[in-house]
Length: 237
Image (tube, rainbow, N blue to C red; front, side):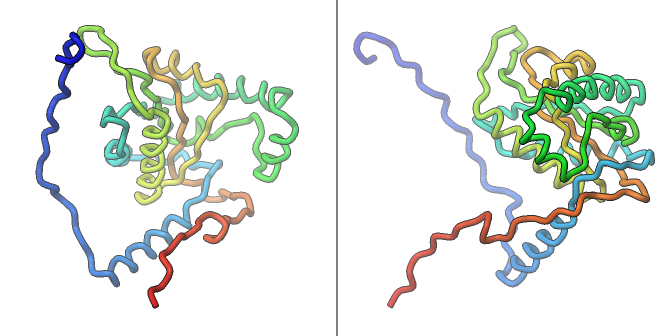
């Protein structure tokens, strides 16, 4: 009791031994890091897809990997909806292209359109139908318990962003191409996919095999010195 008011004690954490961590010799660590970097560097955003089907089990495994992401208070505020139904994909394309037309025909500032010109994008999004799988990623603003009470989620954007990055990497590692698509607004996804109001569309991820004649923009990536700074201790004398 403090100041005449009762204080509520927080639940004690339940801690268990760390399981699954594997330490490698430094030389092996470097080889693994280099191999992963080289594989990651081969990832490209693809807009032209084959209609070849992708096994559902493969998508499930990649989503399981995304679900291992760290999250605020471990609330795991994400939900993934994998869509392979042609009719549902067609509805998503119609709704997405409606928003994209508004964007490209006056909704976006010219500076933004000029930046996109190098990528060759426009309001037409055929990949939303030709790709075998769309994964709609939703950010859960709050949880709803079985009794209807609401529980706030923390660091939702950060948590869902990390999970999405893992999902993209898992799909690439498995051998699929991907595309991140963010028409604005995306509220149509709640209606089409029957998701509750406490979930906000975060991103629409396209996944599948690239078309045999797929082409990608001739762009590069910034070098290490442009994206990272290392503050190392001065060498002892």
